[in-house]
Length: 429
Ligand code: HAM
Image (cartoon, rainbow, N blue to C red; front, side, top):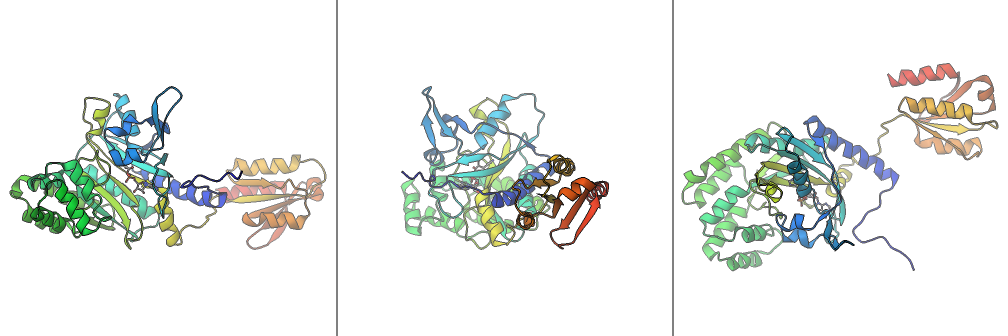
């Protein structure tokens, strides 16, 4: 029997891992530079954690099972409920709180370009304040991460506001808001006729459907947003403060990034816990699935406590980012640490060689010792991915010297051990 890899799961070899790690660090560095601190949580949670607030679509996608103790558990499909559990379990934490995490998450989705059944998901969330400044910081952090990865100009962020959307839908006479959101979430996937008939199914007449379609039809700026809302609602003054808040949020986001930010009524997000701003980033060419998504979710804390804690955040999956970086030719290996390949030609003991290796490593550089006892040419060949080859034969051991070959220029020289240490230290400072 041939055992195969499970569909939708990925293997990662070292040559890719090095590049992934480099970009993962760029993401976490950016979050830390904004003052976000890392948290972590279990990969297995009770399924109920997602039943109440994440929505049926996500629950249907879980890798869930009944464990040996008869509990219904699931591999986490997202990080937000666990993050809120950590938050509410500690009353002593001074707010506002800025946290990030980088777990693997699992969703039983149809594997396709940029979508897998297991992926790494970077999350950033901010708790304790509900304001346009904080909404803007979260979108600003998301865009700063993409900018720092080298993707400026490659993406755009589309924003909507569930509070405003709910107001408009109510104003149009729609009562089942969760169902309306779930239909609007499918707007881009459905043809016009099926979309309209689904809206008819929740009591929207032809006139209302037309109005909703005119809202969703194209992205706009905040001026366009104001015009559209004025045109559609009965009493604009009632909702004006919310429109003003969105306008202010857009202005503030502009202070974090030069990237394109649109208002897009069709972004409502599949997860049901969002209560305010919602946003997603896409590649400007519109070829790929969402790069990231997030929003404000003030009510989720009620899963664990009576207190409603203001919350806003987003998550970036690694899959679409990787595709974009590859398309931009940025998915290349970078030698971050200096590396030394020690060719071992000595017939005596390894003491001298291991001493050199350990001095190199103590300066946070890479030292790799060839243990094959092959001929020099083969060992030098193996050194080709490193910055330097260090050649140690019987003569070097006897004379306390080191032969150093620069693998880029092929220059080679033999220096005393102390001079070699000096070379190492000079290259470190
Ligand atoms: P989400 O939109 O479901 O939001 O996922 C966020 C991002 O995770 C997506 O934009 C995408 O990059 C990535 N992603 C989702 N599913 C897959 C998949 N099957 N394969 C590869 N990548 C995927 C959330 O999960 C929210 N919890 C985000 C959030 C944090 N909201 C507030 N705080």
